[in-house]
Image (cartoon, rainbow over all chains, first blue to last red; front, side, top):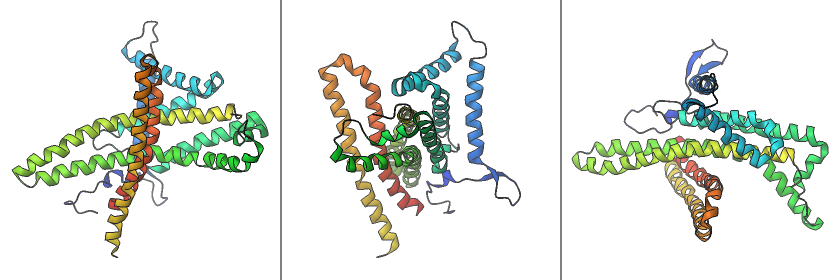
Length: 251
Length: 75
């Protein structure tokens, strides 16, 4: 693992302690540092860009307003106007995942969302919100979520278990989708970058060959930027769809 | 069989799962183009759905790709 001559694409995900608090096992890690940086960037940008609110917005304010409008339209279209009470929640999740993903694209930066413990915590936050709010708002009627309307009675013994399993697998699919996309993307980038190095070490013929994986690496970097934005969007859309289930449980 | 060999064979088998995602993604874009060419004026409004379907389908291919990579490098 520590051999410098082999390509080790997993190394970039190693969590290291920056400040450790004695033998307690608690430590301020690079993961925590980048979470703080992510939150700091979001808060700083949104606060500064909207500090001097103007009727005719400047460049920074336009970006903030576009982000707001984008998420607001998304929540409104999938969870209805009543879902707008969850707008701050969805906006915070979207911004956190988006900025964390984009932060990860910088060289030597740690990608917070490439660890399943982070994404699973976010997904459980969403699912628990759906469960708690769904039962608080609808009471036992929330269980109608598992009994689709208009289905004949004799099919229900098959449909209800399927609905229950699909509900239970939501936090897993939500978290694994984000984590696996980011992890696999970053590993692929490192693997192709490793091809460039190993082929380039072969001399001038290797230089010619190495240009192919180099072009591939550039294309993959562009794809990874797309994936970073897309996965944040998908996470937020699915969150608002699940919140819609809590608000309107009968299909 | 050596464990090292089994690892590589397992990674190869896991990568086969990406074929399913390839079919799915091709299907999504093909169907979108079919619909969009029939009614080009409505295609802009469905672009979000296209990207959403692409991301959800592509994630499944990423899963098997991830398993292959983990077998190769992490196990």
